[in-house]
Image 1 (tube, rainbow, N blue to C red):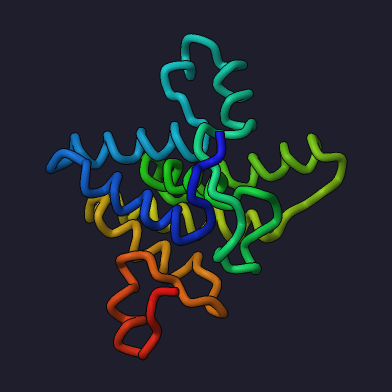
Image 2: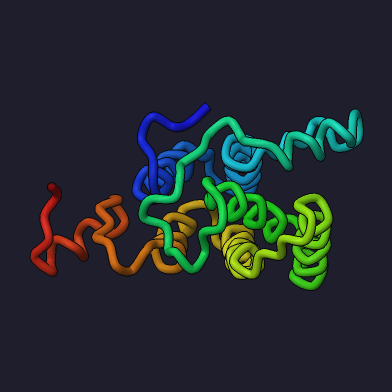
Amino acid sequence: MTNAQSGFDAFCAYLQVKAAQSPPGWPGTVWFVLSIGEECAGIFTQYIFADLLRFLQLAAGAPPLQFGTEGFAPSLVDDRNPARHYVAFVFIGFWLPKFLAVIFLYLWEIAGFVRYKGHWSSKDIVCGRIGIAHGEWVRRSGPTVLPALAVAELADPQQIHLCATQFDKNKARGYTQP
C-alpha cells in the first residue's frame, strides 16, 4: 500500500504523528520503534523466532507504507522508497550497539549485492549509517527527536520542506506554503 500523501514531507509528518502518539518513557519509545519498523520497513518482529524465512521475506519486500522519493536528498535515493531503508536502520541502530549495527548494515548490503546480481549501493550504505545514528539518538532521547533528525539529514536541500518541524524556519525565510 502506498501512502496517500507521498514524499519526504509526508514521511516527516508521519514521524511527527507517530512520535506524538507514543506513550511516555521507555515503553513508548519501544512502541514507536516497533511501529515505524513494521509500517515503513516491513520489520514484523513477531516472525523472528516463529518463522525466520517469513520475517526475512517481509523485511526485504515492500512495507505497508511507502512514501516515494520526492523531497529526499538525491544522494540517498537508489530505489522507489528510501524511507524503508532508513527506518530499517533506525530500527537496527536502536536495538544494537553501533559496532554490531554497522556490521549488520554491510552484511545486509552484501546479501543485496548477491540478490541483485552485482548491484552495490553506496547510497544505501550512507542512508543506513544515518539511520543507525538516528536509532541511537532515539534510544537515548526518545521518539520526538527523529523528525528533526530526518529533516536535517534526509531532506533534499534544493527543495522547500514544509513539514511542521521546519515550517517556522521556512516561514522566517519568507517562504510560504503553496
